[in-house]
Length: 255
Image (tube, rainbow, N blue to C red):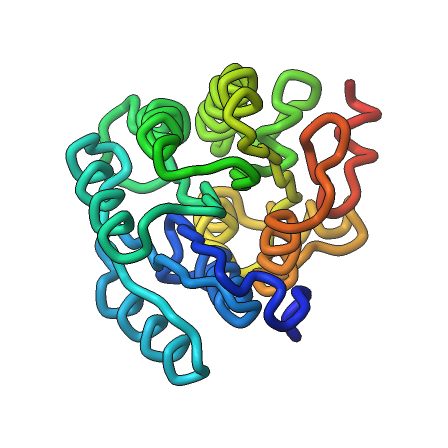
């Protein structure tokens, strides 16, 4: 998919995209870099992929660094932000893309740790790096955003609840962000074809993806949704601070 952002629109800007060694995050960080931003490719354990993405961005004339961090570890986040400060001096765009909770072998409360507590800590810790006019983008799903109005698949419900809790906690920071001149927008999308979450859901609930696709009419793929996330970093912010990607009629009707 072609870049939705105009060439050089982000020249001089500095962007960090969490969970950007693959999937939606990787395409998002690439779009931002192609538009002129100096970017941070963040990864938890996919260092090789992150470095390969940095090489591709640099080969295309962009500027990028790869910084590993476990977002559930406050000291790891501090180290990441210190590296960002040393390399770029601050941030103009923070895309909070990393999430999870369906992985096997994790603690029972891991979804809440990552999708709520870690997100709040990240934004709180990153605030000193964000100046007036900076933009924070939080990535979520319709299934999580509307979890109080519409039921979702049982396999995804704990993740959806934790994602909504994270969104609510970040929205509570809006007065603090506004006072500093930092903008905030939530990007909510339907199930995305080709993501790890969709794969895990399909594995635990065969037919889930095709069923949702039939109900929605179409589902965005990774590149298409990433284009919406990247655009949210520059487009005017909706009145309710939420950018909806794809049809939401099923969720609104359910409420």
